[in-house]
Picture: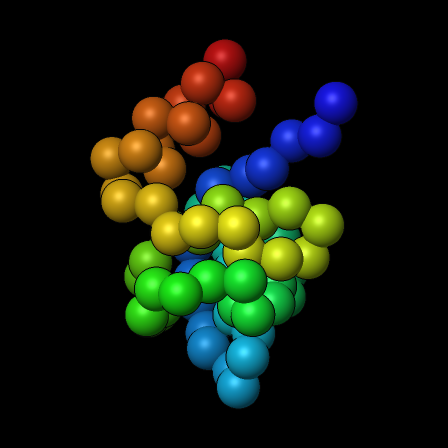
Length: 70
């Protein structure tokens, strides 16, 4: 089973975003090549295997993170 994780964008580069996992110090770089949406710092992205799969609204991201934390 694969798990996609909601992350928050902390920095944008050319075709990648640096994202914070669970609001902590752990950061990952993810490709934005699969997204059609505009992405900005502070946005939430659903990541899997180094790729942003889709943009999430804040409520959906926080709901998912709360469930994962339980």
